[in-house]
Length: 625
Image (cartoon, rainbow, N blue to C red; front, side):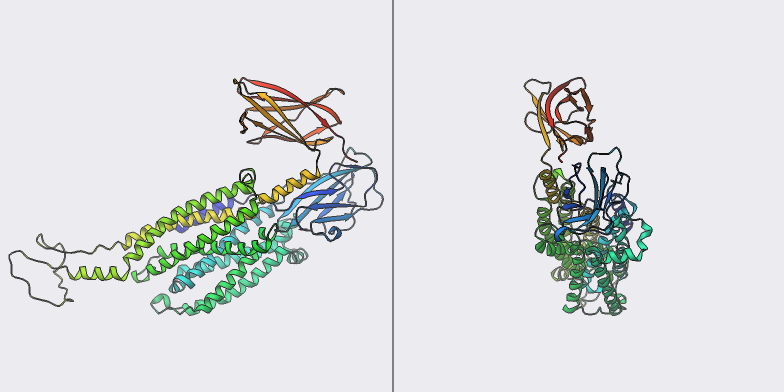
């Protein structure tokens, strides 16, 4: 039942956490700029990103107003800069609006895509239409996300079970549960790696699932950073398969009472080297490979992954052994449990230490913990880890009691108590002397009311049951931590999101921010509403509104409406049609047709019956040429 519960929890968390991922890189600028109107046709289109990117032949497309492609050659890096992509345009281009559609792969392996427009001469009535969905909101993207979960799970099982055998209890290598666990871990990791490699090409190019078997696309995927890491992982797994087979032959017969083989330092060194190499294949192609302090982030990521595998995989191994049904002499020795307890404590300490560094590196600020998706997910992970530590403290208590029960001193006291059990009959002559080892069948404790006995109380079974329950809870919470960790590896780090926003802010200095005070309806309570128009120019604009209380805190209001009017030309009012985004109000498609002085009317409903309207003016500029 415990195994079934764990499997059900894993499947539920996999399906629930396999949402779309956000990539690390972001578009910081383009030439021509988004929405710009040029007098003459440009010779090329250049995109600049917040970090290095890679792309395929079809990554950057420039489409004419008639939806015809006008870049005859694939994209190249501009001036050798890895964070740029540039395409040359055909000779004579007609006037009208052109659409630039792009899809590139960031340094941490995640694809990103987008589109923007520019015009030559004057904007046209029609423009090419391109898909703007998330790169991961496809069948391939969702399948790729699930397979990443499976790969992490396989790594944890493989590393944890092997470490338990090499460090804690060599005899466990001969037991059927541990052998099955090693097999399941290896198969899960190998199968997911093969599938990830096949899907790498369609994942990067937004292809279909059936295109996974396109040999040309597979060949291009192998030459990328992520594809190369997956190929290296498969080679390592082939070596591990050979070693596991050899170790299985050495352990054959030990489960039937034979003495287990000796595992020396060489076996441990080989195991540690292979585990580190496996972890490097993740660190080389994910968040640790991009951003700041890459030289330090790579080994920290490797340590974090290995500590996760040792702790979580070892927990599941111990749980299966504790629930194993068999003769009493096949139970897990208390000494092995104690060794795993010490090892797990060190692994959790490494997890916490490396996790703190990774959090600082990826988040960047305290505010980002609540304002970004990565930060909020990280807070959830920290809360679960604290809960795991609390449960682990009880596991350590049960382990300490079990070790004390099995200690040599305890055994001596128990044997002495057994020898001291003597039946005495009141008023009768003393019984004849017998040897210490004489155990008559009629000399049992409790045979008569006048019998005085000293009975040893062994609580080992009680301690094992308590430890088994705590290990079960700890393993389930560990699976939750693993799933959250996998989600984090597919989410845009907060520091990168801040860099992207800052770059966009620098590239677009025309953003208009209005702060308008208003009466909140109670005595001496003045609130403010902050309206942001981006880019604050003619054309399509994003409108965001945040309401603050008198003390500067966020205020929740039942309704907020923003309209803009050009009174001189008699245009408007244009309703921004704001929607509540749970903390702020926003609209992303307000189109302003003319430059000049616009009046912004803001209506705030503070209660079911009270509302107030305030106004402010803003100058909308024309599109730069």
